[in-house]
Length: 158
View 1: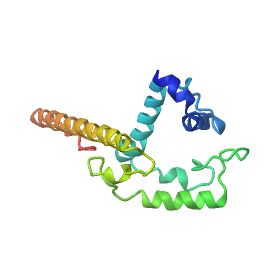
View 2: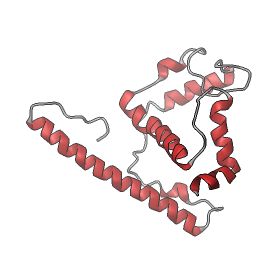
View 3: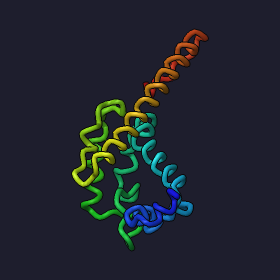
View 4: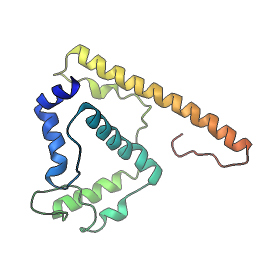
């Protein structure tokens, strides 16, 4: 099964364990569905969440805010270098980033991947982008209906 294969993948197991090493995320047992849900959640927050809710700079301007790097035994307090890196990072993320619908294929030409692995990744990305396009059209249709009722459009992601 997919979950059994995940449990045999040392990198996936280490990735999963990482979330409870420093802060108690209380993730469920590693499974394909649980990993899929976690990755989808992370992708949402680094793309749509940032777009919808805006900057998190207020959480990074104090060392007792949100630590960008967790170090065993240090708690939530970052070291000076990590704090400075977080400030640089947040200053750069205030700019508009490449859209999810842009061409990302250059990222999936990994030398260690077999051609069929590269193609499989490209197929997933293209299917995801096709679903995003359908979602965009649905939002446009809903916005049109809202506008006709005298309501405001929802334009955060479109």
